[in-house]
Amino acid sequence: MRASFLATDTTVRKDSRGVPYLSLKLVDRTGSVDARMWGKLPEEFLNDPPDPVYVDVEGHTHEYRGTLQVKLEQLRILRPEDVSEEDYLPETEMDRHLLAAELERAGQDLENEHLRALFEKMVLDEDFWKAFCAAPAAKSMHHARIGGLLEHSVSCLKIARELAELYPVDRDLLVFGAIFHDVGKVRELSWDRGTFAYTTEGRLLGHVVLGERLVASYVATLPEFPEGLRLRLSHVLLSHQGETEYGSPERPKTLEALLVHLVDNLDARAAMYVETTMNVSPGGWSHHENPLERALYVPEES
Image (cartoon, rainbow, N blue to C red; front, side, top):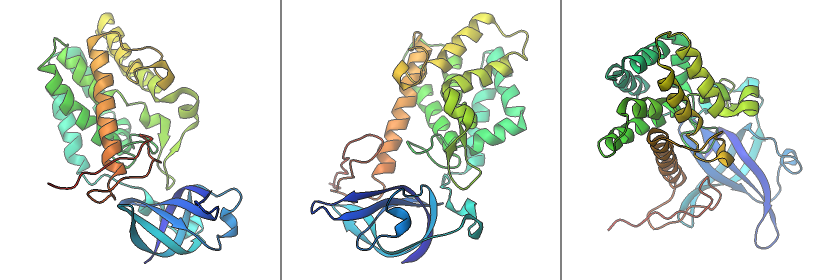
């Protein structure tokens, strides 16, 4: 095979014999695949490997311990001006218009008039809604693709609807929180330069604080919005990471906040498994180097 990709996670390692090799991930709009290169490594990658960087590669695919991998024979760095950056950003395979329409219907179905008005205010902000529907849900952990945030939000909405049938919860607040808990990602991340990256305010404040501030700015335009509801909504947004070490200023202290945290964590971790094992054959194991930090097993079909 010969093709061009965006190379990420580039590192020089040593195998069991102490021989150095290049480990990297090759990315384009269809997804990513692990790659390795032995032998004479390109000088540019020996000391401080550029990451990310566009590359032209030659090699062949093979299965290594049940996982699809590319063994590279040639590797050449491309200049950014010689590529079309949009060709290298992973994008959801789902229809973003249909995903957005599902969220919009959920907003229209809210019985709480204040949350419904807030939802409408946010969706009618064309710049914001366009960004929300395009943003990745993460730089690399899960749903790291154009439309990933939208995909994640719809999945969380579906889970939240089921939980609302089981527990004595404020259904509308739970639904709103499930949809918009990660809204700060539209400011934490950038995706317009051929790769996903953190913005300056994303690095300094994080998506939790940015998201609460963003929603609060819309609430401020609704003078009839109840103070108690505003406080409970802010708590849902600020605590959705669950623990302070994961970026939440507070831990969840209401049922809605606890469930939004669990819904977010459930969908994120399930997505990590699916994405990590995408190139793993039945009966095979993934590498340890993944967001869940463990080898993951794909059972053989019975």
